[in-house]
Length: 214
Image 1: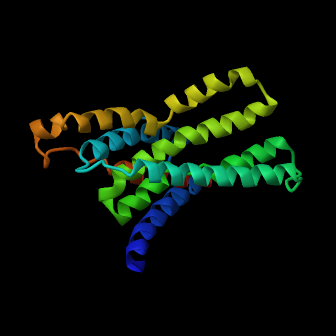
Image 2: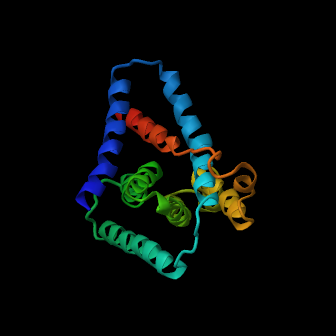
């Protein structure tokens, strides 16, 4: 088990550090990183999600247990943070508190998917579905919290805008739709000829390392 975890974490850490090193050494122009991030976020990640969900042999998920665990965890974390704010344990102002709140409950999708790909690729589609379920609620919670001291009437359009710009939300419907109708792409082209988009995980983690380096 330990070896399995190491095999999943070490390559991920190496890719992140490579991105940090290349960015810190200024080996390529700054425009390259913006282009890399755009392609990773808007093209490669949705394509990967469509691919893994479409080709998943079994998408049956214990939805009640899954949603109870995910949303229960979010609720507990939110209550703890809100109680800390109300009790005056965080004294650096509401804008700083919203940043702290987002830092606690948000997660990096690239990291989560890359770790699961290293641990068990057969569960990659399930992690993607779970992440999509939790991202919707996270966006609602974060935007709702920030709207408490802002324009409350603009909260709903902002939530919709955040969701439609998320690659998980973009990749889920076509992937599930193709999986539901029997994956016609695999029927026509054959399983061996289907393109593997898993390199987008490494690309996304590499870009994350570059952002860390500033």
